[in-house]
Length: 256
Image (cartoon, rainbow, N blue to C red):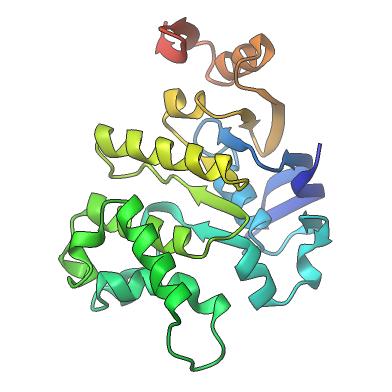
């Protein structure tokens, strides 16, 4: 297995509280991995550590290279980030949708250079794939929460990075657009990309290739989504209040 991301002896604190405890994890390249667990399990914290956004103990490697040793630009070309619910995006409300998506191309552009034809083509592809192209001349602040989320997803896609990390990407999306997101992920995997997503929607998480089950700041299980051991771990971490069934060829988590 070729690793997209590898975490070795990862520990992390938020303030004085230790939220990740000695995590070792290898996430495979060219696969979609979902990270699940109850509130407070450390899912988002782990994703931020993998993205290089939080100080931590231990080492993270991106595509075989120490993440801490990479320049910011080199890291941004190879790893794309979509934060939870567009947190911290309020300052972008006056930007046009097209310009927000173009921000994803900054790692590929020389300092103060105008966008190239390749940049414009990447942005159009990203906006069309999230069905946001028609809003390209609207301000981000004029959009609903779901529309805004689709634009921020387009920005992440416009990077055309090898690895995409997404924290709650389905937040504010209605069911049809959640389905569109899953189709987009599958297209990315077919192109040789890697997607790692934190998800509360367990049925969407079960559609991934692999699943990481977390609880109390630890990785409790890491396996394929169609593996019975993964299903047992998922059920257990939610105190057996859900049960995994197969229905019409899909794995579903339903209340007991």
